[in-house]
Amino acid sequence: MNPEFTPDLIERLRVAQHILVLTGAGASAESGIPTFRDALTGLWERFDPTQLATSEAFEADPELVWGWYEWRRALVAGCEPNDGHRAIARMQSLAKKVTVVTQNVDDLHERAGSSGVIHVHGSINAPRCFDCDVPHEVSALAESEGRLPPPRCSECGGMVRPGVVWFGEPLPQEEWLRAESAARSCDAVVVVGTSSLVYPAADLPRLAQTAGAVVAEVNLDPDALGNAGDRYFLRGAAGEVLPALVDAVWP
Ligand code: OAD
Image (cartoon, rainbow, N blue to C red; front, top):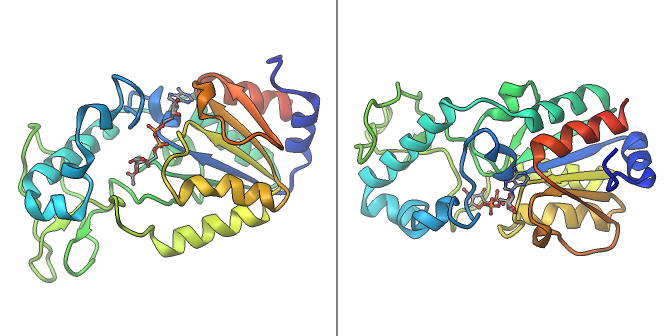
């Protein structure tokens, strides 16, 4: 068994009444979706977020921004869930209660069989009107990459925007309240593949810890480890660590 799975951690997960699983881009990395901040491969290493991930950027150059998100939507559509997503879905079927909160805008948790997934940074498959907020049906994926004019809203004629949270925007309120409430009421948190740099999502493990929960963090990078204290660091790839962890806790 992985030596980082200490008997104490295994027991605390086994007896937990409510486990919060918080995922970031690292959870989807083994599916082929690039993370944001990993050196060389991260999206924010290659693209400038101020030109792509703000409402000002969309207003300044809607075709650039819409085309980039359509490229990412096509990328997600061509990827499959990995063993980490499947282990989280299995955890949901074995533990008393598991709430999955994700910062990812893909739908790989759902496709792996997880239910009730809370998307605190929105969804790439849920475009809506930039002006009136009315949801817009997703269109067929474009054949070519590059600049693309955004569709028009059927209600007001405004431009349709991607359904993701951009820098400087608040999180969707209902999703955030549900995530925060899960953090305050859970007794264990499993954090997977996040650099914990983007707030307020990065605050959820701390909130849970303050309320008495144990935190286990799965990440390739030991520097991603949050503060010490009642935390366990499980170093490795989500697709390897999570299945082994689920097997160890619910044999
Ligand atoms: P980051 O790219 O900041 O961090 C990804 C983390 O995953 C890093 O700590 C990696 O070490 C780790 N990692 C990479 N591959 C892994 C693997 N196979 N298994 C385990 N860990 C792995 O991504 P996020 O923390 O998700 O915001 O970024 C947070 C937010 O910043 C995103 O939701 C996005 C971005 O700007 C919005 O779109 C609003």
